[in-house]
Length: 104
Image 1: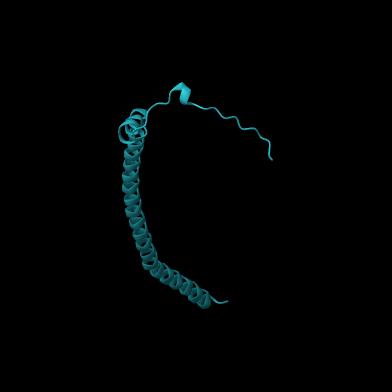
Image 2: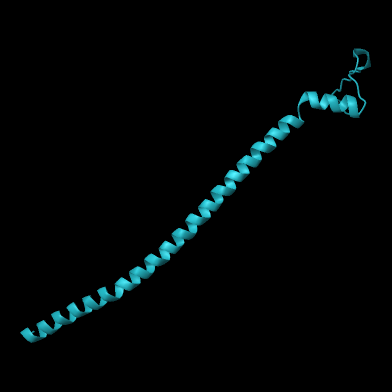
């Protein structure tokens, strides 16, 4: 190749490189904006989920406390004696039944 052809080829590649670089900057900025939007959306969702989790943990603590109170032996005995008119069985009232594993 002669010198002029080499210079034209070199100039063509320089111009091509500059054009690609010039076009890639807006594309990269656009991709960055998309990623920033995704990050913001995910960060908001994480915050909402953490708040919901905290609320559920507090509700769970309250429910566990309620279960503890409602299942106390004293409360159950009080309901049985006062509301259901039950009484503790005497030892004479207890009948023991043995079940054997035989089938008829």
